[in-house]
Image (cartoon, rainbow, N blue to C red; front, side, top):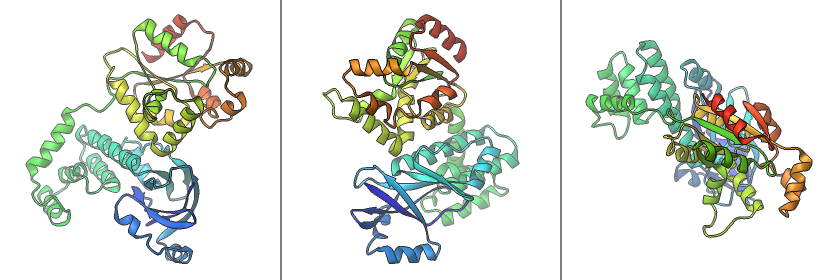
Length: 377
């Protein structure tokens, strides 16, 4: 068990950022973050020194229990309130944080995730912001977008290009970048312009993809319904379950308990990576009219899918009576109490309420396919 006890270098409300964490493992304090130098900050760190950092404003106390494995590279991911407001104003909403133990205060919201996922959050948002930037002609709006990008990844080449393109004096902006930013000394106006033009040519991810996300607990016969419906209509089909299986040892069939445990850990540690992976497999089938994304078991993961594919996502829940599910679980020699109490099963009622449409497990698959087809448009 790894316990997060503090965040170092608390970011401001005007930021979308990562921050190093102080964690307690086996009774010892360590610092983990997004650079190799983070670990050195934990040398000789003890409770007294940590309290000094907190008193000086260089750290914020926290208490987050995680089930991340020992040695995992953890980081705090933060979305400041001012950043969120600016992101909404420019029409590039900040992503929902699907991370371990999200907490909020007057300044913003933060949680614990893997370094890989934190970078992905920032990278995807900046990419979407730049796509909005190149489609916008209004000078004031372009400058607001560039400002928001600087609040996220200020030294990213895409941010630098947007800042240069929207500056009152582009030549002066480029000169400043060459003086201040490492690696930009040889940057030219042609390179900046080429990056913006390339962004304008390349379509945003998932724009040509119609996704129908299916939720429903173990024992609802959801998988069978999805398979029947997609086979009947020739639609594509991908599954979060398959993504979890790929994370386990090849050449064997994992147990239900192992799937649940690994799936919950993946949602806690790498929800964004998981969602992008599944949508990537879906996009490979974008020639199909609709692609079903099966086994969505968390409300926040559904929200993440909606953020990634905002214009092309519909949600369906498959339901069954509890006594029917219990009987089916027993027929499969599974413990109903353990299954129904698992974290991967606890949000089913929320997913049902949030779904665009619910279908009973004994619904006619052809009628289900017709309604889904109308729903997806």
